[in-house]
Figure 1 (cartoon, rainbow, N blue to C red):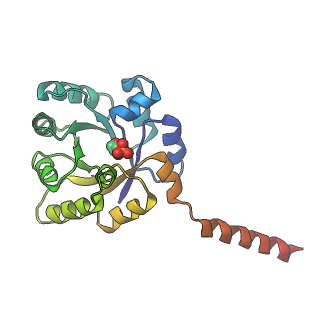
Figure 2: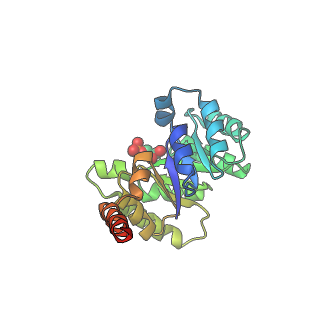
Figure 3: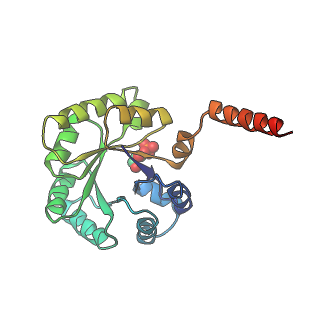
Length: 214
Ligand code: G3P
C-alpha cells in the first residue's frame, strides 16, 4: 500500500519525505487555506518536494470550469492529480479530464455507489473519507471493505485512496483490506513509527550495552 501525506505544509512534507517512504501528497482547499500561501506556488513547491502524485483540488462547481482549472493545474507539473468532487458536474469533469490524459482523484466519497461512479468515470483515484463517516457513528472501514470487494469483480483501474484518517490503526486496517493508498496527516505519520515498547526496549538495550562496556 502506498502512503501519502495529507497536508499542504511544506516543512512537514520535506521532513517526512526524508524518511524515504512518502509516496505522494494530497491537499484540499481547507489544508491550503491553513497555510496562508498562494495555492499555485505551494502546489508547485510540493510537486518538487515529492516524486509521486500530488493532488490539487478544483474550486469551481460547474464542469466546464472544473475542466479549465484541471487543465491549468496539469501544466504545473507532471505529477499533478486533479481532485474533483463527487457531484454530477464532478463526474462530467472527471470523464473529460481523464479522456484527455489528466489524472483525477475523485474526492468527498462516502458510499460504495459513489465509488462505483468514480471508477466508471475513469478516475485514477477514489477518495473515501473514513474519519468523517466514523464521526457520524458509522463504520468508515466497512466502506473500504465494500469498495475493495466491488472493484475486485471488474477491471477498474481506479485506485482506492483511504482519506480522512485519524489513527495509525486505521492505516494498518486499510492495508489489511488491500486499499491501494492511504493518506495521513503529519501527526498520524509521526505516530506510525512510534510504540512505547520500542522506546523502552531500545533504552534497555543501550543501557545494558553501556554497563557491559564498563
Ligand atoms: O484530504 C481529504 C481528507 O483526508 C480530509 O480529512 O480529517 O478533514 O476529514 P479530514
